[in-house]
Length: 338
Image (tube, rainbow, N blue to C red; front, side, top):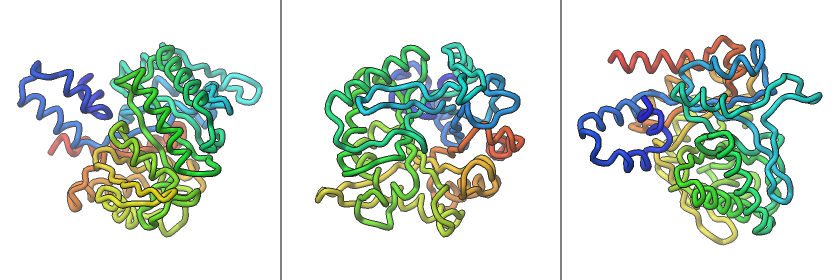
C-alpha cells in the first residue's frame, strides 16, 4: 500500500528506489493497479464548511481521497511565506491549527499530503520579483516541508499582473529551488482552465497564462490539476472535457514575448478538477457520476487514462454526503471486481 500511494504522484523516483528489489511481475501488477483506478485529489480548507469542525473532518476524510491538499500558503512582496491555512482567530474562529501529527495521520492512511500556495484570494504575482523573492520563498517552503512532513507543494497561482512569461519564470525558479533542496518533493499545479487553453496560440493574462510554466516545468510536475469551473457555460460540460483533455495530451504551441512554448501533458499527469458540490464554486458543477463516466470514457474510448480527478473541496463533499468521493470509490470498486 505504501508503494502504491507513492507511485500515484511520484512514479519515477520510487521506481528507481525499488530497482531490482522487486520481482518484475509484482511491479507490473502494482503499476497496473495505480493506473487503473481513479485517483482523487481534494483540497482541505479549514475555513470552508465542515461537520462539525475541520479538526474532526481531517482524520475522517473519505478513503477515496488519495491526496489531501491543505490550503493555503500565503506570501508577501518579499517572497516570505505566511500561514493562511490555520483557522483559529477572530477572522476564522474554528479552532483549527495544523500540526505535524495531523499530517502523519493522513500519510498513515496511505494518502499523499501537499500544501497549496495561492488560491482565489492569494497574493498577486507580477513577474518583476527580485532574486531574493525566490530565495525567500524557497527557504520558507522547505521549512514548512520539514516542519510538517508534507510530501510537497501545489501551486494554485490565480492572481497575476504584467508579463505572464516573467511570472512563469518566477514560479519555475521557485520549483527548481524546491527540487534542489528536496529532490523527492511532489509538485503540482492547479491552473484555471483558460490558463491552459489550446484553442488560442498566444499567452496572455486572459488565456494561457500558465502555459509557459507548464512548458518549462513539465518534467518536474507530478500533476496538472485543471480547474474546469468558474469559467463559462459552453466549456463546463462533459462534451468539452472530452475535447479538452485529448488536446492537452496531443500538445499545442503558444507564443509569449516572441518565444514559442510547447505544451504537451502526458495523460498520467493530467487531472481535471470539479466542484465537490453545487456550493463548491460559482459555476461548473457536474453530477459526480457524469464526471467519473467522462474519465472512464477518456480511458476506454480515447485511450487517455487520466492521472485522476481533483475537487474543491473536501469539506463541501462531506456536506453533500461524500457524493463525489462515493462515485469515485464505486468506480474503483467495479474496476477491482473486473
